[in-house]
Structure formats: structure tokens, C-alpha cells
Length: 127
Image (cartoon, rainbow, N blue to C red; front, side, top):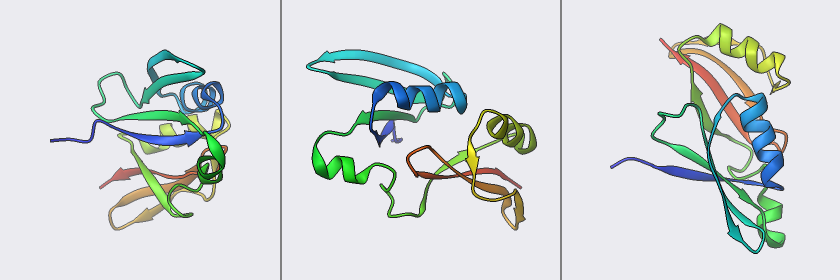
């Protein structure tokens, strides 16, 4: 078994695509109109990635309130890198907001970044 996908709630499909594809550099895997304003939007770090992110447009007050706080303020998503320095520079240059400068930990190099809505991610390269 493996996790095929997980959802990140966003305020708008196109805004989610603009950030995760245009700024972060993920691949748009699928964008299918499901009618009535719904879309099935999958992005992934690469076309071959097994796990994908479903960008789910918030509907209603409860989902809207969860935008950017799906993990209660904790880092909830982890993007592994094979070339931390290059990926850090590329993301920063593309306007991704890092909450800290890169740091070395026992497990590897890491820096916390966030999407425009507040979801927190680790960029990390394991030792």
C-alpha cells in the first residue's frame, strides 16, 4: 500500500495551481472539470511521484476556516530534496516565503516554508 494523494484546501483552484506549479515548481498532473464549479486538480513534485496533492477548493464556512491551518499550525508537509541548496535558492527566488534560514540538524538540512495561505512545509535533505 501507499498514499496516493492527500488534500490541501485552497480558496481557489487557479490560485493553488499558480502557487504550487508556477512558484514551487510542481507538475500539474490533472485538472478535470467535474461540473458545478468543481475540479479535480492534482499536483506533484514530479510526474513520476507516487503521492499527489489534491488542491481542493474550500466550500462552506468550516472548510474556509481550515484554509492554511489544516495541521493546527504545525509543519504538516515535508518536501524532500536531493539538492537542498539549489532547491532552497530556486524556491526563494520564485517568491516562496521561508520562515527561517536553512539549518543543519542531526537528520539533515532543513528550512520551514509556507504557502500563501499559511500551510507550513519542511524543505529537507536527509543525511
